Image 1 (cartoon, one colour):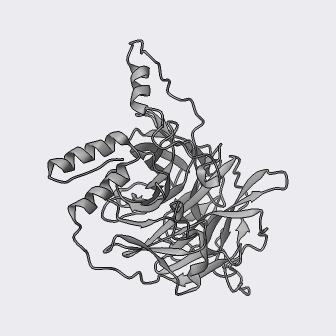
Image 2 (image 1 turned 90 degrees about the horizontal axis):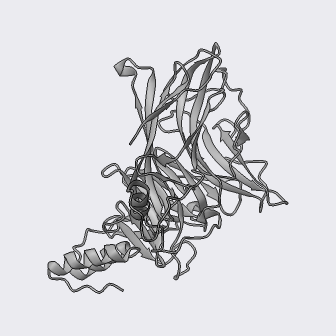
Length: 436
């Protein structure tokens, strides 16, 4: 991953540190008021508003919930509002001073920051979201034809080798999606193009941000943190990609330090939510050939799968899982259709959970320890709060060789060449395989 450095012009000399949040943005005790019964956006307009991001600041002891709302006007104009709500009032309110001027934004992650700004103590959060110009498939944009993406290797060869090709393939010129950073209650904001300059490859939209990791460097005598996270989205070659982002933030000088993006995997299967896997980087959701998958490697075996869409009941179309959260060994997911899914890792199945109000979950999830919030499909603009439910786990069963073959070929089936390669490897081990 190639790192760059971007310095931001901040007019004040300030000192911030990574700690848990509490109180208001001026450091004063928050006055006691009667709280709503559930976290609610009182300005919500049914049919016009959509919740496209929800998170609890990673590691915060008493942080606010952070939400991202998309609003569509009567003239089809689209705007986005970053909101926060604390536990005292449970009312979501727009964050002042944050400009979101891209056509689309999706997902949020956040980390708590506390310290001194312009001579006053503040408790706040650093928020990251993704902005982009064109509608992704999650906004109803067109899906690329599976298997017909532009050949990235061929495009790079034509760019780098001074030989006239028979049919020249140009590297696409695109407007990259941006990682948009905002330190709430301050002047700090930054936008970074989501581009791996070594490939070169850019995301043109985003489907999910996840796997946030923060390293505080104060023990090394540095007033900064290093932040990393994963992103899923569509790249300029018409493939779906997973990139890792990394950036530094100096809380003494309010400067964004070194930053960069590294391509991890690409595939033609539509990707959804991504979340940390403590044992192997990340989990991510995908829909392919009418089924729903949870994977940790695009060319490996699925960690869990289910036929069709378990949220909508559509047996012909895989679910577009929009958010995942992990608590201990429990992984939960939601989609644009109501329902809460859990992962039976032993049985390698995606299962639906229906014993509580969480059966009405939709769109987005947030997690703090064992407490979960989700958007309420029966009362839009309101969150359901619940304790992480138990997901029944099956005993680990040994699979037969044909079952392993079928699964590997299905996952790699977005590329005929990859499927043929797996077929050859497994036939060499004595398995009979048919690639359709």
